Structures are given as structure tokens and as C-alpha cells.
Image (cartoon, rainbow, N blue to C red; front, side):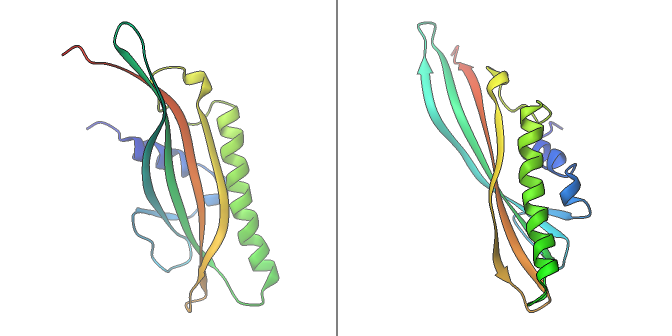
Length: 150
């Protein structure tokens, strides 16, 4: 079975030290502390070029929302700061991995210009169970070259 793009990205995200111990699912998120969910938002074609040979080159952006359920106690400033640091650490890790070319390669052309970013980390919701849901958006920009010989 071919390894999917989503699975490739999740396998890579799981290697981030800031997310160690998270239990991952797709399109769902348990209210338990340490739960993590990946919510694919799709792929958008940013630019398309066609050359005289009929080859189509697309610059694409894949967006994946990651949600984390982490321990949270109202009034516990140290715990809130720990959760915020975890999100920032993930965002910085993604930037470093992308710059060092250790992030997954999704495109089949111009792979040296692929870029992975993680941004917009924020608390979305507080739960009565003593947890909070946080969100960060992972984006990957890559280039695909297509040729239709039909």
C-alpha cells in the first residue's frame, strides 16, 4: 500500500520533541490531555503554468490544522505558559526542519523550494475536564509537474 501524503506528514510531525507523548487521530480529537488530531484542509493551486510541450506545472499549498488537547487549570499561569511554549516550540521546530531540508518532500519538481510552516498557534476552547484545545496550522508549499499524454 502506498504511503499517503497525510500519513507522511503525520509521521514527520510525530518526531517533534514538543509533541512527544501525543496520541494522534485524523478528523477527531478526544478531550483527554495529550490527544492530538489532524484535520486536512485540502490542497490549493496557487499558480499554474503550461509550456509548449503540454507540461503543466502547479505551485500548490497543502493546509493541515493540528489540534492538541493539553492539561489546563484556570489560574495556573505556569501551566498556561508551558502549553504556549509547546506550541511555539513546534512552530520553530517546523521552520528549522524545513530550512534544513528535513521536512517531507511532497512535490516532484523544484523540490529545493518547498517550504513548511506552522503558524497561528492559539487556544481554541477550555473544557470542564481540566484540559484546553489548542490549534496550529501547518502549511506546505510545493511544486508538481504533470503531463497528460492521453
